[in-house]
Length: 125
Image 1 (tube, one colour):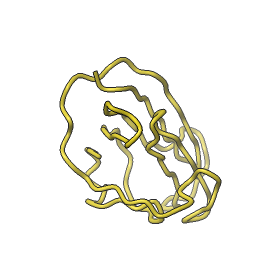
Image 2 (cartoon, helix red, strand yellow; image 1 turned 60 degrees about the vertical axis):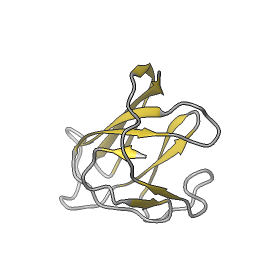
Image 3 (tube, helix red, strand yellow; image 1 turned 90 degrees about the horizontal axis):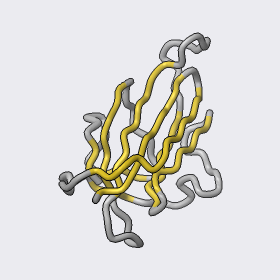
């Protein structure tokens, strides 16, 4: 996995959250069931016009699947939802695969705790 978010730790575990701030970040990853890498941009921002408590946590998880990234949210840390980090899974940071990004295949969005997470994703060519 390649992630341009400087807050992402070297080893990411599905059973642990890490703190990050607002911003737009680029990621590349692969899975055992596909032959090409996938890419996505994710943007974390405060939701305009919504009331939220400054400093309050918003919990998001991004599942790295062969069909593209999946988004999950919860008001509770280390939540358990079918398909949302139900088992411990570790991903290590690495270098970008290189190559050309293919067209955007989809976009997804979640809102939680006064924050918005938006993802655009596709496959590498």
